[in-house]
Amino acid sequence: MNTDLTTLTVTEDQADARLDRYLRRHVEGLSQAMIQKLCRTGKIRIDGKKAEASTHVPLGAAITLPPITPAAELPKVRHVMTMDAHMIRDLEASILYRDDAVILLNKPSGLPSQGGKGIAVHLDGMLDALRFDGTERPKLVHRLDRDTSGVLLLARGVKAASALAAAFRGRDIEKTYWALLAGVPQQLAGRIDLPLNRIESPGSSRSEAASRKDPEASKAVTDYRIIDYAGKKFAWAEMSPQTGRMHQLRVHALALGTPIVADATYGAAFPDGFAPQLHLHARRLSFPHPEGGFLTVEAELPKHMRESFIHLGFTVPETAKPKRSR
Image (tube, rainbow, N blue to C red):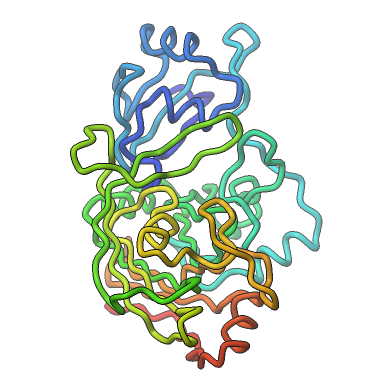
């Protein structure tokens, strides 16, 4: 086995993308011509098998790249950050739950899950600090947007990552988000079934609502209910995505006519008296534990959302302790 290979694991929000597009997003400086050449020669593989540049990458797939050498002109994929004692303490303080198979964090708003062009500080670069007594580096199983806070799941090894990827593929993961909406939807509960297209532009990516007849569109479904509201101006929404598309909740909230507060990308206003940070939080994650049973973990609201909720008179329930059923 070639231990010099670099491996990337496809997370839920990245699934179904073309291999060449996936690699260009995640490996800075890797050109289309280089990708095609490496695919032709079998040096880029998906789950150990040769793949075409146009192959759509499945959830949980392991994409391997050849050794990074000057001759191959491939940049390094993972940037391992140098962390001081303060950064390590903050990272450890964000741990919500930990055992031999998984770690769950309360990711702060503003911290990217993974690196990319112009991103020097990101969670993926910090994961060596979370080895503890384990021999393997923890692996991201899914991602949250840079400005979304809340529960983020890590696998403590390849075996756990494989089991969790299978759970995501089977839709056995229950994700619950809280959002503060600018406005109140006409229907206080329902399902948003609206396909999305991913739009790439230099330095940014976004999603847009698409026609059901568009063959390039990805299915996107979100269940929601309004927990509370303040007049007609603001609503506290609980949103449960049934699929995992990029910016899915943000675009679906916009489709309701009630964008998430302080979501500059999708046209929401920045109301006076509210922090200029996205008001979207991954509140709860429930999933089959790799070693058996079902684990449910909740994360407290970030400071800016808690202050906004208090300002609007919303009563926020206590955060439940992690619970694992056997």
